[in-house]
Length: 195
Image 1 (cartoon, one colour):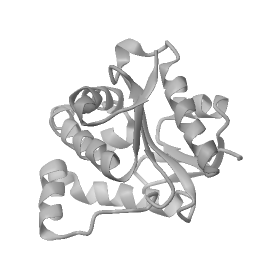
Image 2: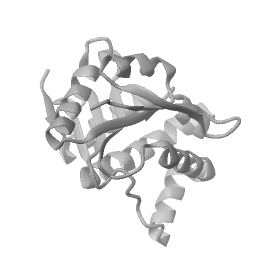
Image 3: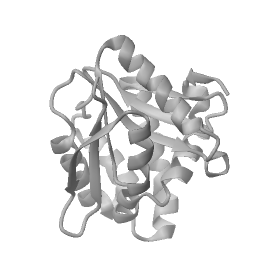
Image 4: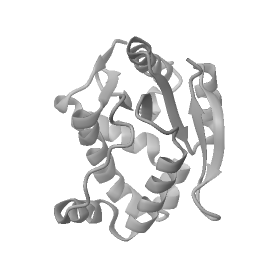
């Protein structure tokens, strides 16, 4: 299956893929412990994240958006929306009472992703559950790594899913740090490609 740059027309399918793939992610489960709340709020979060990457990043995936990766190229790795009243209201609509935990995760990731903007940051990688095991995740990530190589920038990522660490290592990433959001919060691995 071909890997392409996805645009607005893929939004609904990409949100469905991202929401399904992250529904059991340890960080997302810590953020939204109640499954009903998670099911309601996760599409809002993934919609905002997808839109953000259309503006500030790169969205790569299969033509049906059954596999999706969200990348932040150099100059956008640590970019955040200014916390104006409309942005705060938007985040409250997305996170509700989980907004404090969301800020804690975001701040922790910002502290542990390698410093500087000369990086190619894989923010999220997702494959629709019924399409997993076909190599689409690896193929989509390798397409992003090719973009990184052309830009001459080091690929980085973080994951809170232990089973993902081996997948990323097979793609050439190495663990550079392990850390916790808080005592009771999720455990993360920060990983970087050696190039």
